[in-house]
Amino acid sequence: MYDALGNHYDALIDGEYYDKWYSYVDELIGDRNVGADVGCGSGLFTVELARRGKEVVGCDTSPRMLTKAFDRAKKAGVNVRFVESDAEKFKPSRPVEFITAMNDVVNYMKDPSPFFRTAAANLESGGLLLFDISSEFKLREHIASHTFCIEGDDTVCVWESSPVANGALKYFLRFFTRTENGLYRLEEESQKQYIHEEASLTAKLEECGFTVKVYGDLTKRKPKQNALRLHFSAVKGSVNG
Image 1 (cartoon, helix red, strand yellow):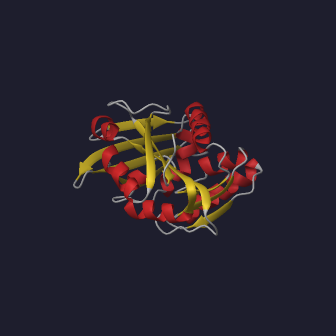
Image 2 (image 1 turned 90 degrees about the vertical axis):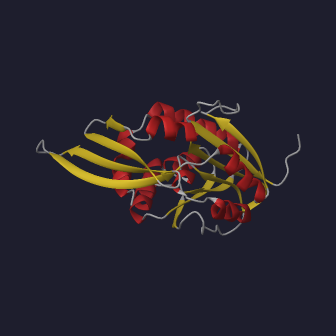
Image 3 (image 1 turned 180 degrees about the vertical axis):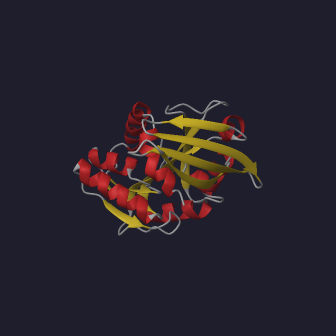
Protein backbone atom coordinates (compact mmCIF):
# COMPACT_ATOMS: atom_id res chain seq x y z
CA MET A 1 0.00 0.00 0.00
CA TYR A 2 1.17 3.54 -0.87
CA ASP A 3 3.99 2.18 -3.05
CA ALA A 4 2.62 3.67 -6.26
CA LEU A 5 2.44 7.12 -4.67
CA GLY A 6 5.93 6.66 -3.29
CA ASN A 7 7.24 5.86 -6.76
CA HIS A 8 6.12 9.24 -8.09
CA TYR A 9 5.83 11.54 -5.09
CA ASP A 10 9.12 13.37 -5.56
CA ALA A 11 8.24 14.21 -9.17
CA LEU A 12 4.94 15.79 -8.16
CA ILE A 13 5.80 17.89 -5.10
CA ASP A 14 6.47 21.61 -4.90
CA GLY A 15 10.17 21.75 -4.02
CA GLU A 16 10.08 25.39 -2.95
CA TYR A 17 7.26 24.73 -0.49
CA TYR A 18 9.09 21.73 0.95
CA ASP A 19 12.23 23.80 1.48
CA LYS A 20 10.16 26.16 3.63
CA TRP A 21 8.60 23.19 5.41
CA TYR A 22 12.03 21.67 6.20
CA SER A 23 13.22 24.95 7.72
CA TYR A 24 10.01 25.30 9.72
CA VAL A 25 10.38 21.80 11.20
CA ASP A 26 14.06 22.40 11.97
CA GLU A 27 13.17 25.63 13.79
CA LEU A 28 10.50 23.93 15.91
CA ILE A 29 12.86 21.10 16.86
CA GLY A 30 15.43 23.68 17.94
CA ASP A 31 18.57 22.42 19.68
CA ARG A 32 17.22 18.91 20.22
CA ASN A 33 19.63 16.65 18.36
CA VAL A 34 18.72 12.95 18.66
CA GLY A 35 15.39 11.86 17.21
CA ALA A 36 13.22 9.60 15.11
CA ASP A 37 11.11 10.23 12.02
CA VAL A 38 8.18 7.80 12.00
CA GLY A 39 6.17 7.09 8.88
CA CYS A 40 9.24 8.38 7.06
CA GLY A 41 8.20 7.11 3.62
CA SER A 42 10.94 7.78 1.07
CA GLY A 43 12.95 9.73 3.65
CA LEU A 44 12.32 13.32 2.55
CA PHE A 45 12.25 14.76 6.06
CA THR A 46 14.56 12.14 7.60
CA VAL A 47 17.40 12.89 5.22
CA GLU A 48 16.90 16.64 5.40
CA LEU A 49 17.04 16.55 9.20
CA ALA A 50 20.27 14.54 8.96
CA ARG A 51 21.67 17.07 6.49
CA ARG A 52 20.98 19.76 9.08
CA GLY A 53 23.02 17.93 11.71
CA LYS A 54 20.39 15.84 13.50
CA GLU A 55 21.07 12.27 14.55
CA VAL A 56 17.87 10.68 13.31
CA VAL A 57 16.49 7.20 12.62
CA GLY A 58 13.62 6.68 10.18
CA CYS A 59 10.91 4.05 10.34
CA ASP A 60 8.16 2.98 7.96
CA THR A 61 6.03 -0.09 7.28
CA SER A 62 6.92 -0.33 3.58
CA PRO A 63 10.18 -2.09 2.62
CA ARG A 64 10.03 -0.46 -0.82
CA MET A 65 9.79 3.00 0.69
CA LEU A 66 12.64 2.24 3.09
CA THR A 67 14.81 1.22 0.15
CA LYS A 68 14.08 4.57 -1.47
CA ALA A 69 14.87 6.33 1.81
CA PHE A 70 18.19 4.48 2.12
CA ASP A 71 19.11 5.42 -1.45
CA ARG A 72 18.18 9.05 -0.75
CA ALA A 73 20.42 9.14 2.33
CA LYS A 74 23.30 7.55 0.45
CA LYS A 75 22.98 10.07 -2.38
CA ALA A 76 22.89 12.95 0.14
CA GLY A 77 25.98 11.61 1.90
CA VAL A 78 24.37 11.30 5.33
CA ASN A 79 24.36 8.38 7.73
CA VAL A 80 20.78 7.43 8.64
CA ARG A 81 19.50 4.14 10.04
CA PHE A 82 16.12 2.98 8.72
CA VAL A 83 13.87 0.46 10.48
CA GLU A 84 10.79 -1.41 9.26
CA SER A 85 8.10 -0.75 11.87
CA ASP A 86 4.75 0.94 12.26
CA ALA A 87 4.48 4.10 14.32
CA GLU A 88 2.55 2.51 17.19
CA LYS A 89 5.19 -0.19 17.80
CA PHE A 90 8.44 1.58 16.99
CA LYS A 91 10.96 1.60 19.84
CA PRO A 92 14.34 3.31 19.44
CA SER A 93 17.40 1.85 21.12
CA ARG A 94 17.30 4.64 23.69
CA PRO A 95 14.96 7.53 24.57
CA VAL A 96 15.16 10.36 22.05
CA GLU A 97 14.84 14.13 22.17
CA PHE A 98 12.33 14.47 19.35
CA ILE A 99 9.95 12.43 17.24
CA THR A 100 8.51 13.66 13.96
CA ALA A 101 5.57 12.26 11.99
CA MET A 102 5.33 14.46 8.93
CA ASN A 103 2.95 15.04 6.07
CA ASP A 104 -0.34 13.51 7.22
CA VAL A 105 1.04 10.45 9.02
CA VAL A 106 -1.59 10.93 11.75
CA ASN A 107 -4.36 11.35 9.15
CA TYR A 108 -3.76 7.73 8.19
CA MET A 109 -4.51 6.59 11.76
CA LYS A 110 -8.11 5.94 12.75
CA ASP A 111 -7.18 6.42 16.41
CA PRO A 112 -3.73 7.97 17.03
CA SER A 113 -3.87 7.41 20.81
CA PRO A 114 -1.62 4.29 20.70
CA PHE A 115 0.94 6.24 18.70
CA PHE A 116 0.84 9.12 21.18
CA ARG A 117 1.40 6.71 24.10
CA THR A 118 4.32 5.07 22.30
CA ALA A 119 5.85 8.45 21.50
CA ALA A 120 5.56 9.54 25.14
CA ALA A 121 7.32 6.34 26.25
CA ASN A 122 10.12 6.85 23.71
CA LEU A 123 10.84 10.50 24.50
CA GLU A 124 13.06 11.96 27.15
CA SER A 125 11.44 14.34 29.62
CA GLY A 126 11.07 17.62 27.75
CA GLY A 127 11.24 15.79 24.44
CA LEU A 128 9.18 16.95 21.47
CA LEU A 129 6.56 15.13 19.42
CA LEU A 130 6.06 17.11 16.22
CA PHE A 131 3.46 16.17 13.63
CA ASP A 132 1.04 17.75 11.20
CA ILE A 133 -2.35 16.90 9.77
CA SER A 134 -4.46 18.00 6.87
CA SER A 135 -7.11 20.00 8.69
CA GLU A 136 -10.77 19.14 9.00
CA PHE A 137 -11.51 22.24 6.89
CA LYS A 138 -9.16 21.12 4.13
CA LEU A 139 -10.45 17.57 3.96
CA ARG A 140 -14.14 18.46 4.14
CA GLU A 141 -14.14 21.61 2.00
CA HIS A 142 -11.22 21.19 -0.42
CA ILE A 143 -10.71 17.45 -0.84
CA ALA A 144 -13.94 15.51 -0.25
CA SER A 145 -15.83 14.51 -3.42
CA HIS A 146 -13.34 16.25 -5.69
CA THR A 147 -11.03 15.07 -8.46
CA PHE A 148 -7.56 16.54 -8.94
CA CYS A 149 -4.99 16.29 -11.69
CA ILE A 150 -1.33 16.79 -10.71
CA GLU A 151 1.25 16.99 -13.47
CA GLY A 152 4.99 16.33 -13.34
CA ASP A 153 7.50 16.23 -16.18
CA ASP A 154 6.75 12.64 -17.18
CA THR A 155 3.97 11.67 -14.75
CA VAL A 156 0.35 12.68 -14.36
CA CYS A 157 -1.64 11.77 -11.25
CA VAL A 158 -5.46 11.72 -11.29
CA TRP A 159 -6.71 11.73 -7.69
CA GLU A 160 -10.35 11.04 -6.89
CA SER A 161 -11.73 11.54 -3.38
CA SER A 162 -14.97 10.34 -1.81
CA PRO A 163 -16.23 10.47 1.80
CA VAL A 164 -16.89 7.19 3.62
CA ALA A 165 -18.20 6.34 7.08
CA ASN A 166 -16.55 7.25 10.40
CA GLY A 167 -15.12 10.60 9.32
CA ALA A 168 -12.86 9.20 6.65
CA LEU A 169 -12.02 9.90 3.01
CA LYS A 170 -11.15 7.27 0.45
CA TYR A 171 -8.76 8.17 -2.33
CA PHE A 172 -8.32 6.44 -5.66
CA LEU A 173 -5.14 7.42 -7.47
CA ARG A 174 -4.09 6.71 -11.04
CA PHE A 175 -0.54 7.44 -12.20
CA PHE A 176 0.23 7.74 -15.92
CA THR A 177 3.96 7.65 -16.60
CA ARG A 178 5.50 8.26 -20.03
CA THR A 179 7.74 5.39 -21.13
CA GLU A 180 10.68 5.45 -23.54
CA ASN A 181 8.48 4.45 -26.51
CA GLY A 182 6.12 7.36 -25.88
CA LEU A 183 3.33 5.25 -24.40
CA TYR A 184 2.05 5.63 -20.84
CA ARG A 185 2.25 3.07 -18.04
CA LEU A 186 -0.71 3.00 -15.62
CA GLU A 187 -0.43 2.37 -11.87
CA GLU A 188 -3.41 2.46 -9.51
CA GLU A 189 -3.66 2.74 -5.75
CA SER A 190 -6.29 3.38 -3.07
CA GLN A 191 -5.79 5.07 0.30
CA LYS A 192 -7.87 6.17 3.26
CA GLN A 193 -7.40 9.19 5.49
CA TYR A 194 -9.25 10.08 8.68
CA ILE A 195 -10.50 13.51 9.66
CA HIS A 196 -9.28 14.60 13.11
CA GLU A 197 -10.46 17.63 15.06
CA GLU A 198 -7.85 19.87 16.66
CA ALA A 199 -9.52 19.73 20.09
CA SER A 200 -9.78 15.94 20.04
CA LEU A 201 -6.10 15.44 19.18
CA THR A 202 -5.05 17.99 21.80
CA ALA A 203 -7.05 16.15 24.47
CA LYS A 204 -5.54 12.79 23.51
CA LEU A 205 -2.03 14.26 23.68
CA GLU A 206 -2.66 15.83 27.07
CA GLU A 207 -3.92 12.49 28.38
CA CYS A 208 -0.47 11.12 27.50
CA GLY A 209 1.30 13.84 29.48
CA PHE A 210 2.11 16.29 26.68
CA THR A 211 1.92 20.08 26.78
CA VAL A 212 0.51 21.04 23.41
CA LYS A 213 0.71 24.00 21.04
CA VAL A 214 -1.01 24.02 17.66
CA TYR A 215 0.01 26.23 14.76
CA GLY A 216 -1.40 26.80 11.29
CA ASP A 217 0.16 26.65 7.83
CA LEU A 218 3.92 26.89 8.55
CA THR A 219 3.51 29.71 11.09
CA LYS A 220 3.83 30.03 14.85
CA ARG A 221 0.32 31.44 15.10
CA LYS A 222 -2.85 29.69 16.16
CA PRO A 223 -4.62 28.15 13.17
CA LYS A 224 -7.22 30.21 11.38
CA GLN A 225 -10.60 28.60 10.73
CA ASN A 226 -9.61 28.04 7.10
CA ALA A 227 -6.11 26.71 7.82
CA LEU A 228 -5.20 23.85 5.51
CA ARG A 229 -2.48 22.26 7.65
CA LEU A 230 -2.23 22.07 11.43
CA HIS A 231 1.12 21.58 13.15
CA PHE A 232 1.14 20.00 16.62
CA SER A 233 4.11 20.74 18.86
CA ALA A 234 3.76 18.50 21.92
CA VAL A 235 6.37 18.54 24.69
CA LYS A 236 6.56 15.67 27.15
CA GLY A 237 5.83 17.09 30.60
CA SER A 238 5.08 20.65 31.63
CA VAL A 239 6.64 23.69 29.97
CA ASN A 240 7.58 26.74 32.00
CA GLY A 241 6.69 30.10 30.50
